[in-house]
Length: 480
Figure 1: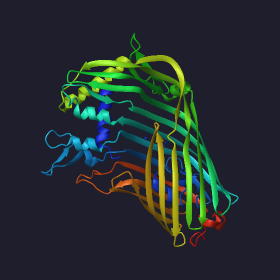
Figure 2 (figure 1 turned 30 degrees about the horizontal axis):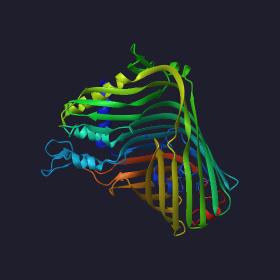
Figure 3 (figure 1 turned 30 degrees about the vertical axis):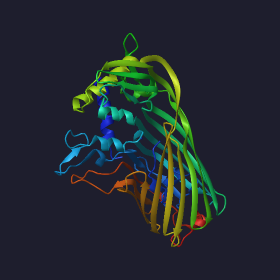
């Protein structure tokens, strides 16, 4: 119960204070030609450099987190007395304004990726092959607006029944090893195509979804009605239950790595990336790709499911900390007394968070500068999330490049993306980020950002100045 209460409070706190989890490269990276990582977004895009080598643990470190609706200033702001207050303050807060900012389904996410090793090289001038191994993790929480409405307002109708629809509530987290190999081929000076295959070795998955979930609340009682299922696939995960099958405790049976590996049965998955690039003229590039189209097959699942029909005493309309604790405790109690643990081990499938990229880039001044526009569409838990990024790129010489971008639909015109690449042969250092905040409080807290996405590292790049490694339509004065 205490753990469930903490989870509920952390989810709500994250929604209200997040500075906005398949790992996703920063959008700005798509237009940085001297880095090999745009091949991971579109396998048709060949790097300028003939060969690259990723160094274990330091070549790719990527993290991102955020939500799709709220920024810090929606939940915390200065009042007329120049005091920092929250939207839930009983005297100075504005719950109505906070609620108006919420989308129908609020998405909170976190993602991370770390390279274990990687390599890429040009083949016979027209081809480019690359291979890498990385550790990836992601987590997504989909919170229906009605859940927060219930938390913020309770039972405003004190006579009738307040009805809240929570069917879209979902939680999912993944951790896995990604072994990926790709090939790009330049058909002619206009067309390039590429593909990439991923063999996925699953480490852990946890997910909870509902086929139906509603709260019918009055000032005297709450009734939680619905049906749901929670599933966990994790080495050495054990569940304790009572005589009726209700879960009393769950967690790792052992933390000893040797014991875990001894009994580990790998979960396997597969995914594909496909892409093309079309250059009608030397200065214009049109490209399109699909990324992470695939699935995971998880072994030895621990399953809890059941029909929920639970009634308990309600709470008053007013908002206070005690009510919030009761709110979390009551929902956790409803799930605990309704879900029944199944000791049978099962296999189940999950889909990857597929992405679609479409981009146009126009270069000028002999490719020393360019303007780019990128559309990114992501499929998460059956819902589509769209974003458009505009970028301005400067690459005056082969050892230095910088990009600046802005992503629409995230940040409210208060954040921007930046990319920096400095190459000191053969080492190439880079730092790329989207949604870097432009507004901060006096305490240094980003004030208006909904998200951040950062990738950095040092990669070995070789053959960046040799003409035989540069496709005809990529040759410029500085690629001598």
